[in-house]
Length: 71
Image (cartoon, rainbow, N blue to C red; front, side, top):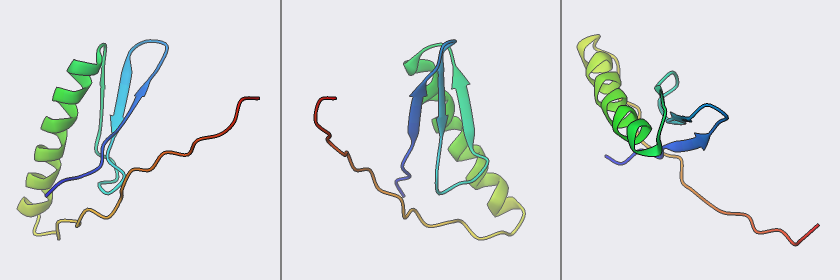
């Protein structure tokens, strides 16, 4: 399965979350670090759900880009 991951740059580094997996987040000082950490977080999140006998959410979020004119 492929889950959408949103990565945001902050003043102190990067944050990432998965809209289809509430509570699945990661933070890191670089984009590469947060990408690695969110990958691990998704795997652990899914393993935890399965271990608790809970359903695995199907991915349903998708990316899009909105272009706006100059202001």
